Length: 437
Image (cartoon, rainbow, N blue to C red):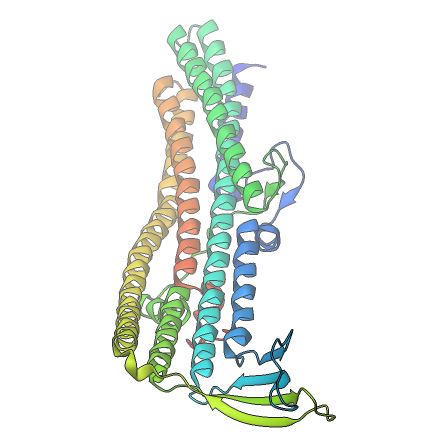
């Protein structure tokens, strides 16, 4: 290949480094892994989510247990032996007793209300686990997509530098340039080949994390991530804060803890009201012909008024627990607003960076590199300037993909903080739609 052809090829290869193809070419893999498929498998198979779901289902089963009446009590006594002589029908030889406590005070209903609130809080904790799992899956997916994009940029630049090496060698042979140009090109090429090993490590780490979240063996091969494009989202901080107040699971957990504490406080106050127990007794006398000789009825009741310290302490304890739950709700609300504001700033920052690199810095770097290549072709630019310009293009494009990854991760983090999809919820009223029970 002559020098003119090599220079033409170099210009063509440089043009292919343009960002606006947007999607990196697949690397050693014709399969595609979509974000939706990865998230769906995480939600279906992640063991942490299965544990949280089982915990919620267990908490639901506690509600009918605490709402139920006390078990009825049955007793039977029979005379095993009598060693004295007694007149007939003086004593009963068999006694039967059935007793049932009646929860007239309603403490069981209050305990059931508290258990119901605990189950609702467990559901919100399950929802938090799901949001966190989706966030982690999206973060790993975006990291994998970025690693493939970086690998694509690196390999395209390897191809380009190989062309530069050939160009510099031909120019050196014709006496147009010094041998240092060849050495510089070969050094830059070696660095790129070394960088590929680091990028391959990032690919493997992201795959291992995705496999872990999907409950797969770490070595399972994954498809190439789908298309990566910059899709800016117009966010309103005020609306995000409203969505967080309406949808964030931590706020619902705190609210359910208040309801549980209120129900338990009311139940503690009702401990002063004893629930009576009614019983029916049947006796059979020793010489009676009838199966039942006598039937008695009665009732029993606790006397809590003689143990004031115990029950007053119980009321004070539950009052403090209610106070603690109310403070937790206030703290959770402030935490939600602070976290959303900080994440909003981060998302907006990477939005700015990504847009700046895509629309301004990368086109300028490419124009500069093309200019340097044309100047080098006409011997108006030295090879080191050309190499520096091309390295700048590679670094700017690599930084663009890195900023895009952080922007998409920032949106995933923000969605997890808010507790609902940004894409659908930003245009909907701020209401909590799912069933807490």
